[in-house]
Image (cartoon, rainbow, N blue to C red):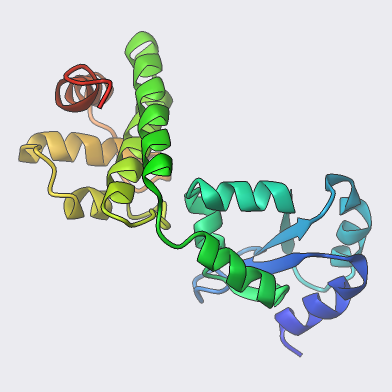
Length: 214
């Protein structure tokens, strides 16, 4: 039996709405744990499910969410949840297919919401000069711009690629600064001195200070 079959057998009696295996195990990369997203109607149902997972002879790393949280994050284009949808469904294939339709093309309202997220993070970064605030501003801005092009961001390791695809009005050095901010979070790039300050200036001059209400 495959790990998917074993998971299905161990979870089928607990009223799990959806279980999806995702991440490195599915991508056939080196992995330590098997990532599983488990969607339940109520958040208090996790105890018995965890016990069932502990009976499996494998390192299972479950993430539990309610159906309401799952659907809400798909509606707003949360990259983590969109990436999970690309995994292998253990339980709830019909529900997952409906969710994929739900997460099809981003609406203008969602794109606008992400611009607001980015603007809020930019204002916080301008005050704090902290890397994380700057990263969040860059991240949400890229997601907003991709959504305006009708595409959701699904891979957190590809923000530099999304940056290139957008053909933004950035010179080569400015693009490198923003790319390092985006990729440093997951250890895919090293920051240079003053990258945060420079990125905040770039964001302000091109987007947030020039026309914050667009």
